[in-house]
Length: 203
Length: 203
Image (cartoon, rainbow over all chains, first blue to last red; front, top):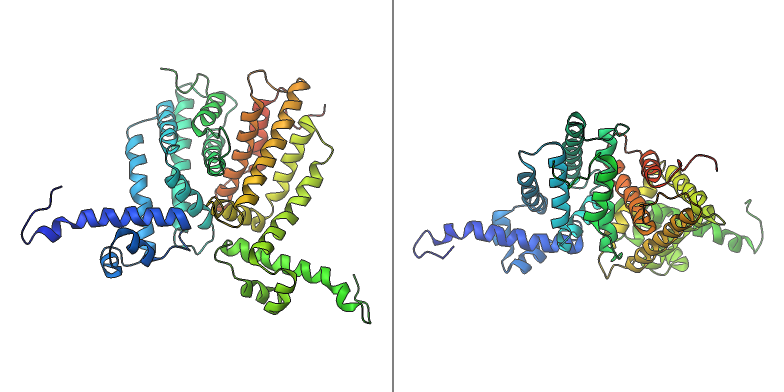
């Protein structure tokens, strides 16, 4: 958006500043984890003063939450309105897209491990996020079952846990440069072993 | 070992002191991750002075490496002399045992994520560890293939990556209290989907 002259200029810049802070925070958290990141490092990377940052985000914990929730909105909107096998295909597409983004993968890998500690400021966020993802994917497998697409010996809850665990574990392997840590291909392989027809076949 | 009187007493105590430091360090690293742990906190928990600790372990990085390698020796000795499906069964047994130990799971989850950063002192350790585990499990699947136990459409390398990733991902779910994050049962389920006969059936 072009900057406008006059008194409204500083207001018009606010959403842009917020974005710049979130981008800088994302980079710093992905590099150092939450516990080792500082607001001053984030301000430095955003090219701002500390008061400039705390005006938008008074606490580091609030800033972390804003970074995480922003990334989740993308995924949620990608899955909206889908059900059953179609939703599982959407989960695969998200995995394929995330595979290109090392910073994002590293942010979630480091923070989700760090936040296993009960009193970590992102603990509730990650616990709720796991519950939401598991519930969403389990519902998709239940719907696939209703639609006659799930193999008869597969439990929808087990299937959901396995898919999400596989995906998280492959992300970690990829961060260690494991050759062929092909998150998309191997998650598809697991899905195909649970479904009657390949997940990417047309209905 | 009972303490002996006389001048050899202080020597006899050395291995015990080392163990106490390693136990204290294990607890502190599992609680805070490596980056947020301090040698003074470890000394405090071990009931020793800082010089007492640094006499045995001059650096925090060296202490971390000793903690990690100690835990690996157990696993290596459990798998020694096994091959093929027998070795895969051993990997399952280790998963079953680790499932009881939240501290150990948390230590590996937090450190392995934290150490994805290239210049983390445990980066090389975890990279090498992943390579070793992947190679070991891939070899087991190759041997299972030679022995006619692998399903014909399964690639041994893919199978190894999937088993290890699933196991890591389920550990993380368990740390968030996900109900039924049954590492053993679901890893067995995956193994069974790759092998011709159930992994726990007798040969």
